Image 1 (tube, protein in one colour):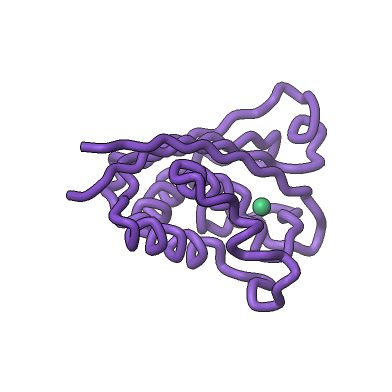
Image 2 (cartoon, rainbow, N blue to C red):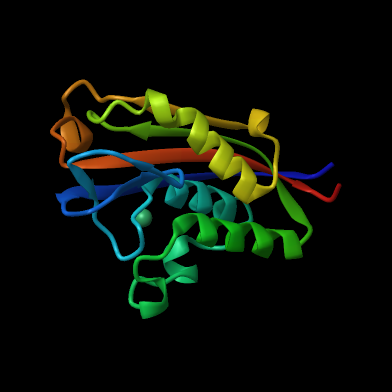
Length: 160
Ligand code: MG
């Protein structure tokens, strides 16, 4: 079996008057992430990991933020499109491991649902999808509450 590994990283600024959506799950919080789409930073990192595995560029190239079609876009739908794209080339996601860094809110209660949403979008068992959350000890972008960051690593397998 042939494999490819990819990694993704994304950052979005936190702002008032926006919904907070992570891994396709709406999380109650006083702020949300700012962006052209729904600004789901976790799902964006996942898409970049999948695209990166096949050297297919990044989501900015596939879903430009200058295109009104992607305004307010549901990032899970974009993830499904990315999975279709690699599927057409014979590849499927084998497994995924992702980390979200946020000082607040506490993400632990929502991790299970995020895993289910992402696994469903990638058409793989939830056991192959890991989502972890961390704080950054009050330091930097996330620690000061300015934004949320996410990293993801995925393995793609060819065929089967
Ligand atoms: Mg993004």
